Length: 546
Image (tube, rainbow, N blue to C red; front, side, top):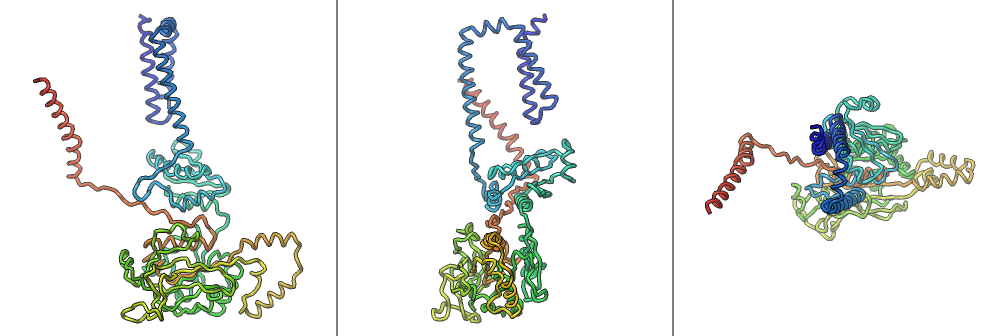
């Protein structure tokens, strides 16, 4: 009796062993149920083999056993080849995103940030819900695919309270991004927030962008269409601090200024402001000017020494492409971009400027190198007769297209150059230079270190003929927002932020009425299976009658 029971241990052991692995595949966790089933199945198989050892040996020596052994060896060899292929695919694989809008692919900005990482980053997500954890893991694997410097972990707060206390987690769904010396927490895992957190923990110093006030510039706090509140929010998302600043009132350039912006001045700068900006640029400063047609701010006297000139015209675009965005001929499109880091990702894209003057590059008496960053189409021109009811191209007066809509100027400056006052500086500045010249000479080692420092100093200026293109009304149109943010990032010398930003995925949710749901239920659950059954019975009945 006992022998008959033991003879069934083999089959029962295999079933119990498979049940253990099945339990593990469901929960992805070796809990007591899965481990108990695997252990019990292994014990039953072992008892069966020990008791029936003679039968097993006899069976192994038979002809069928030899053929079975060869088949088993072939199976193992095939599985080994599959395992090797799978291993090679894991180590050297290529992701292909076939979704519309490439929603499963990281943006070029994120890729640049990851490629420039110089330290290890640990990303830890805390999720109670398994599906949310799987979504976070999928996003983290995209980051890991770009660089091995990203490591991630999904933690169940209920099962690991120690890590919850260590990272001070307060709710489900929080993600901690930790660098070598900094740590940042985000409330939910999106590409934009995760990339910004990585930038924060890897950036050494906080960079500040100052927007000048006092000349009628766009208001950062205004949410109306003409305001710049979107600009402020988007720059802050790039992990810059944004401040408004009245240069005439303060009468000095902020020491921590990474970039100074004047967005749409309507009146002239005071002489002391002009001198301060000149000194700032001479010391390697970064300045962004966005002006408008018919503005009373006369900036050419300030800009021309740097190789930039504003024309007193209004750009007209006769291609009709502006109608794609709901504009007329008075809103030219930027379609031709310079081969420059700011616009290297903008080929085959368009930016739109709703009312702009043309900007030109001229000879610079200060030896700045200029580049026409954005140009209009060949069918556009710079119209001089701005007040005319009907306009047409006049070869004698107007500037033929394509015309430049934005120009930048660059010059490398040494520390010695930065200490010199501008040519039109005041006597106080000259006295300061004379005092600096009278100081004792520094040692050769100091000079060498200063030379290395001076090589990184670069004075940069970008001028647009339109300030409305970055306003709340048009920031999200075409690549306007990306163009503006890339300019700010380039001026701030953050080359890893020069790209097209990630877009929000399009909502593709299908909303069904109760009637639609019922129709789908009856069609898929009732009618189709019933039709298959009826067809099968009909075929069976026909063959039976034959």
